[in-house]
Image (cartoon, rainbow, N blue to C red; front, top):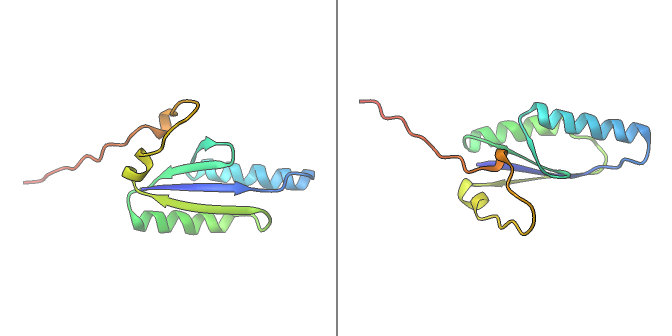
Length: 102
């Protein structure tokens, strides 16, 4: 599964720019990668992992502005059509590898 975070934060004052920068840095520190400006994504191992990271995101989300989260499966994410630009390395398909123990 993937979590996609879309945000639009105010950046008119120096204080607002600092809040924006701190939020963006927190996303990166938490394992998110930039898909586009103000759109970040993160791979998760399942619903429990998604819930954990959404709760963590809520803890450092600024009060002002707009922050939205979309969760999609790998199959849904793979159906993205890129009209312009190229896929980043972080976006490449992740193959699920299962280990069998006998």
